Length: 462
Image 1 (cartoon, rainbow, N blue to C red):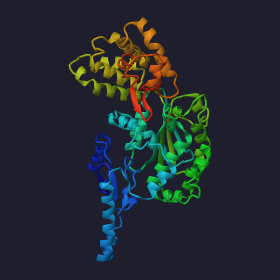
Image 2: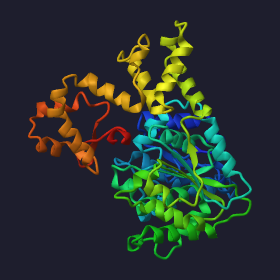
Image 3: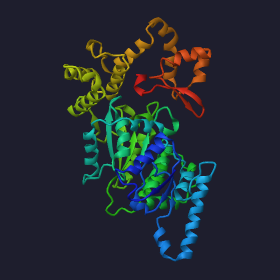
């Protein structure tokens, strides 16, 4: 797919951006972009800003320079487009972004490629206006002394869901970098890899910063820098301080799930950010999310976190709206609809993941609104009822299922299915008998090394 980028085609909202999103997210399209107006005016959308475009923004100047010069320039550009389109393999236009991609080796965490972010964006955002307002108030405040806006909340609050929508929809040019930490993916929790990824993303959005990176004497030898702190200063803090700052509004980097970057009571990413984020220029701000875990709270103790309190009326109002929308067909004919929503709300303990799974259970007939006495209490109750349905024979569960679940949860990374099968000496049919009823909470996923099994949400391990 060829995408011609102009101010008009990348306006927000706009049909063209929707078509690009469909091509990327639904059709898995291979996007090649052509810049027909200056990069500063266009501001490529986050979903394709990592892609090297063919720069044709000066086409009017060439056309005005005479027939011979115009024809030569035009034929060269057309030849490059044809070369890329007709290539048997997925090739990219040559240029600065392509060069930096080779040097920085970013983790694949852009919206075009990260399946986790795409899945979060597929879900409708309900409410949360108060969270967007809190971020905007901090971003536009006259006092820019703090470089980090820290949002802290319990498991299941919906932090990652909010972060995905914040990064994707919060103004086309406001969020210039995003990373989602993942405890089960080494590259997604490695502080050095995360810094390299963010540097690459910022370079795709800030032309002046990109050109500074390309002039760094050791940009092709980054592996020599062993620590995250070294990389942070070399790739982010120092070049950004030299970038053009006059009148620049504050731009944001979003990092989700800081707690998932740690291990064994140590979190290099958080410790590095606590010490080195103040060295960023004041027009760069970090919006980070985490659970209230000690290896995050201790390094960031000098900050006042924005606590995502499940008991606030704003959060309860969002949950109430979500329940009424998702359960509308079941609630519409009932005179006790309002009372039922309030009962579900109390059982949810203010946790969005509870509401999501509760609605799913009702829609699949696992729960009935006719029996409020059977509504599970909290997220733990939701999971407990799931296991009761799938494994009604408790003795068999303890003997055949529980040991394997302990092995999955004890693994620091997603457990290869092959290892699980060998551990318990299962035949292929026995393996399928184990994974089939657990598919909702412990899905089997394909990775480069083979099939792995892991919990769908970190809270399952608790």
